[in-house]
Length: 217
Length: 328
Image: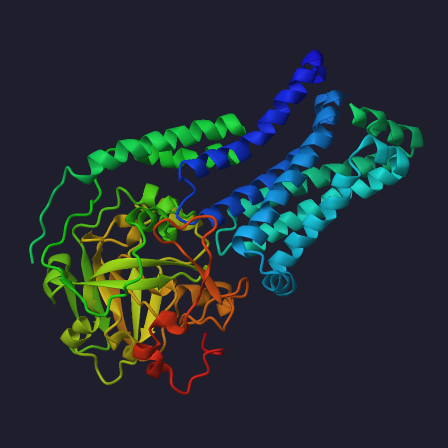
């Protein structure tokens, strides 16, 4: 298992797998299979995949601990960047295909529609995380500050769920499902933080955090 | 009025292809993701399509005359109109109704007319088909979600029914109700809205000749997902006012509580719901719309939404003196 996780091939395979949703969209587009309203279809698909990648990214740390697979950290940055990739596609779809570059209309929406306000905020918060995802930035910021900054992903995940919840008309099952996943993943963190505090061992707390050097792999 | 039945025409062609599509999507979904949601979503569709088909299938309608008021805008292709539906009883995704309504049993069917009328009665589908000559009317149909289609509906003015049942002087409103059977519509319980679906019009709106009692589209009877066997089409109002699979018509003294009004305390959709580019939906602008037409796609420019969906000449007088911002 260890050798699979650390193999460079696994990383390549995961990378390709993360592109499959996009490939499917392109394939469906070429086969005229994006429903009667392709703009809405692409908007929803890219939004869905953003939330899925946010959830998967947030699941890495708990899974590492629970399954005793510290090597999973190798995939975290890539998965987080894919969440950013899909939110960029989502945003581009909105501003290009939906708003058709009418910036005034876009700003009106951001101001007036609370579901767009929160979605847009969640998107903006991901930008610094994507920018500082490199080894150089981790070094420059220092592990502690870098980790603090990257906790913004918690905010984005919550905003993403609210964005979805406010958007749907009446059937809230899917947004609630994502909300439940995000809640579990955040609750796990709060739980381990509380336990760690009770253990009042600074050294143990440091050990629980990912060694920053593995981020560069 | 003759209905020619061609029972083995459509289903043979359609079902196996969709079954195949369903399975392909299912497998690709699994392959691509392993995400449980996807698999869970596709499963019911696969199971239902594996059942033997027993629902109604559109048949050709003969003797339909062309109504002179039809729009000359290009018709939306039938494939789009039959695969992109809001019919929450059969699921809340746009492609759900086309998959889940396939076995919906629409025969026998009766429409019951009751309430403030001198002659309450039940109409069988056969009677409804013969009450007036069928006309093809090509209407613009504007959804509240800011997309629109152009559809050649078949039917006649709803006023035909009104005249037959003779409303009493007390009757000021008409409530319409969609069929609801949780056994046939198991997804209805998850729609998040109260069912059966109820819509309503003021009596003078219902008497407007544009208000259509609709039994077909594109030369055929209605497909299940588009509201078979009989529905209303109110072209100057948002699509959700055009109630599907109609079973009950009730004439009333007071304004009926409609489904979407009851939802979220009426903040989302008002009773009137006239197409109005100047009054935004709480979550999006209604100033423009995406026309789902022939060849429309990713880069098709949006078009400006017209007041009363372009039917102002015929209906604006109904609302003279009313504040349409308040009565949205």
